[in-house]
Image (cartoon, rainbow, N blue to C red; front, side):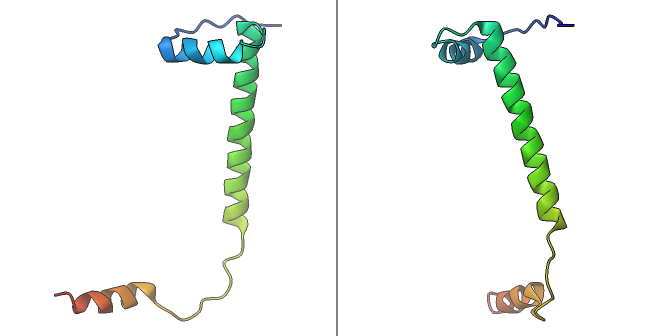
Length: 77
């Protein structure tokens, strides 16, 4: 069952709708497509974040970057 959704548009939104309907698509079809594409982008971004977080970090190389930076900044004082 389809539901009706009402939005308040501004000039930027109206321009976007003009661009999306330039090919003859209805405003309703353009909005539906835009919502679906936005959701797909969010799902893909979330999947990529999860994949990056699952990546192995490898073995530590023994270099303490924080200590190196602190040591190099001692000369600036």
